[in-house]
Amino acid sequence: MDFSPMALRFERVRCKIDDLEIAADFSLTPGAIVGVTGPDPGELQLLDGPCLRAIPPDQGEVERETMFVAGPSFLSGDPESVCWWVNAALASEAAVLAIGPAFALAAPGFRIAALRELHAIAREGALVLLVSQDLDMLERHCDETIVIENGVIIDRGDPRATLGAYRKRIAAELREAETDPPEEIARHGDGRASIVSFELLGADGEPTASLETGEQATLVARVQFDDAIEDPVFGILIRNRVGVSVYGTNTELENVHFGPVEEGQEVELRFQFACALCPQDYTVTIASHDPDGTAHDWLEEALLFQVTDTRFTEGVANLRAKVEVRA
Image (cartoon, rainbow, N blue to C red; front, side, top):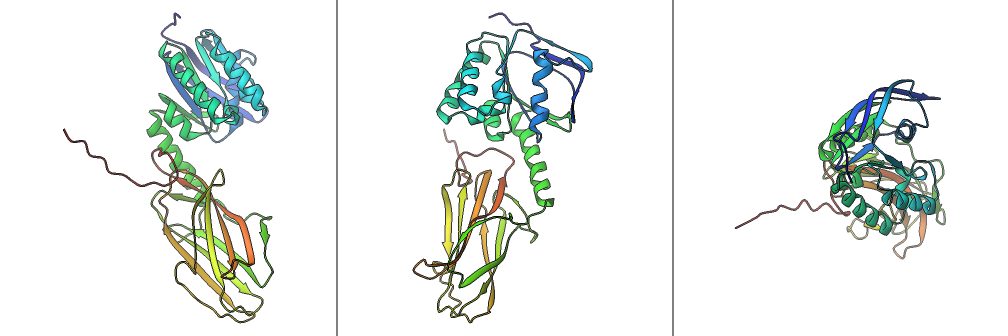
């Protein structure tokens, strides 16, 4: 394949559809995988139209080499359709390939194989645009990343630097956001006790929905006992985004006994821990129960929080390994 030094150029492009607007002025050279991300999926998808020349920009022009856009990977929720179009892109021999956010819907095995092919195609000289909000994937597989927010490019460059800064922005916004629990939580129990409030506190003692790797955190909950209970146990369970249990403990395991309790009594419990987790989303299940596991009140995945870090780390537990190389 023979590619020019410039594979794609947005020259002072402005494009608006309904409430979405994008302003872009950049060029990309071949032989690389470039990640495009940002908080609004609509803005990311809007890049698709001018690239395909299906939507004429209101201002400026788009110059490009031969291009194949895996359309359903931008618009479809059907994994089979997404996979078919990604395979078509891989076989197209176009100078520019664009894969959209719905690529995340494909089965993990397919994504791994497709990304391997995309790396091979980029090494042969093609430009690959990987548009996604999966920051971990972009950090692992891209040579460069572009971050778009409010229609403009706010950062561009090395994936670790740009995505690290973007993660910090996300974390700051989450800390400022409301952290009220969802209106509907799956719960069960015999009603002898009720978990009346719960919240996650960061190292600053303020409620948060975002923790940094290694940050000291506290889960606070208040339990109202509607019956006298001889030996109540209170526990938590943290799961990752695919439902795998990451860590769980309870007052019995920690040798903290606060019974018996009287009818009408209310207690506050605090679980303090160092958040030694890798960046991703997690949930917390909270429960009050008897030593034999009989639930008084059990709140399944009552809290959602995100762990952020300045760099990608594979897995769940962040062991912060120290590496030495000796000759």
